[in-house]
Length: 595
Image 1 (tube, helix red, strand yellow):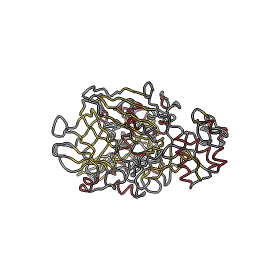
Image 2 (cartoon, rainbow, N blue to C red):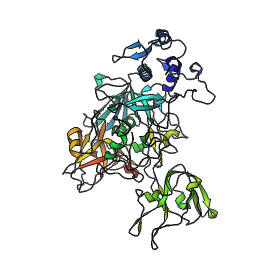
Image 3 (spheres, rainbow, N blue to C red):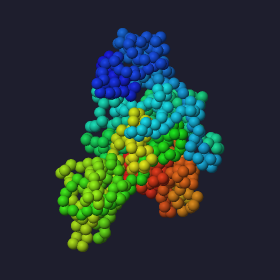
C-alpha cells in the first residue's frame, strides 16, 4: 500500500464513505468529495498546517517528511518512518481515531428490579437529551448519536484477522480496493475503542458509563474486545458483523449472504474456529454484552425487545395445500397460511423423517430441508382462481420439486412441508445509513436487527464460545468464563480449573428449577460476560426475557451458554434470554454461532 496514494482513500473509508464519495457518478479524487471528514471542526482538505487543526500537519508534514502519523501510548503525536503496509494501516486508523476522541461521558441509570420494575432508564451527563429511534430500510428514525458530534458511535465495515490471543486486527476498510465480502475473509464492524463501567454499587440502580477516553477518575475500564491478553489497549473496537456461515474456503466466516451454520456447540466451535488459526475460538458472550451496553446507553433500556423484536415469532410448518406430481419452484399453501408468510423471509421445504410410521417434522431432521434448505421467499401469487397461494422460492429451476407425499412404505407416506427458518447473514444491510434497526419492521418479530453494525437475532440461539454454566445441587448455576488468551476446553475438570468464576445465576423462586423471567442481569467488566441475576415478573418489566432453567434434574455438570432466543421464543427472547438445557457437546438446528 502506497501511503501517498491511499491516504485520502483511507480517510474517506474511515469516515464511512465509499471511495467514490458515496454515490454513482462520484469521484475518486479526495479533494473533489463532498462532506469531507473533519478534525476539530476543520475540513481535511489541502495542505493543512499544525495551527490549522491544532495537531500535526496531516498532508504537508507527512508528505514533506516522508513519514507517517503515529500516536504513542501517552497520546503524543509523532512522525515515524513508514512501516509495512499492515502497520501503516493501523497507524492511520490510530491517528484518525486519536484526533476524533472527544472525552465525552455517556451515562444511563437503569433501575434495579426490586426498586423499580421499569425497563426504561434515564440518560445522564453527555447522554442527556440525545434522541434515538430505530430505523428500517424505508424509515429513518431520529438518531442524535450520528449527527457528527459523537464519533464514538460511528462505525465502518472492515476485514479483520485475529491475533494469537483472539484480539481482532483490521486489514482492510470498506471503500479500499482490497476490502472483500467473500472468499477467505471475515467482515466486522469497527468503531474507535472505548472505556466503560457497569456500576452496581448503588442499592437502587445501576450506572452504565462509556467514553472514548479512559477517565481514570471515573474508574472506567477498556472494553474487553479492545484489550489484548497482555493488557495492551488497541485503538479500535472490532466485532464480527454477521452470524457465521460456510464461506467459499469451507470455513465458518462472518460474511453477508450466507446461510447460518446450524448445530453449533461449545465443543465443536473449538474445532470449527481453530481451523482458521490459533486466535479463533468463535465469539464469546461479550458480543451479546456489546449490544446490551449500547442498547442501555442509546435505548435507554435493559429490554432489547422494546427496541427490536428480532426473529422471535416466525414459527410455522405447513403441509402442501395441493398434492401434485408436477415440479415447481413454488410451494402451495392456503390463503390463510399465506397471510403468515412474509416475502423476504426464509423457509425450508421437505418432509418428515420416518419415526416408526409417524412423521418427525423437527427441523433438525435433514429430510425437512430435502427440497429447499433455508431459502428466501421471493413472492406470493394466487393459485386456482384465488383458492390457494403459491409461495415462490429463491431456488433454481433445476431444484424444482413436486408436492406428492414422500413414500417410505406401502403404508406410510410423509406430506411435503414448508417450515420457517433462520434469516441469512446480511439481512440488516438494507437498514438506512449507519442506523441501528431491522429491515421492514422492528416490531413484527420476523426480522433480525443490528446494533452498531452488528447483526443479532436471526432466529436461533447464539452459543457463547467462552462462557459455560456449572450446575449446582441447589439449582443455582456458576458462570465460568475463559479469560482472553486461555485455551477453550471440552473437559469439565479443565474448565473448572482454568476458567474464571464470575457470578452465580439464582434458582427460580418457584422451586424445582422452574423457568423464570429476568428482572436484572449482571456484567463482569473484566471478562465482558453476563448472567441473569434477579428474577422479574413478565415480558414488559425489567429485562423482560426468559431463563429456560434446564429442568428439575439439572443439579450437576456443565451446560453451554445459549443466548437470545429462537424462531418460537416470542416475548421471552432478547439480549437477556438464556437457555440452560444443553450440555457442552450438544447442538441443534437452532444453535448458531459467530466468529
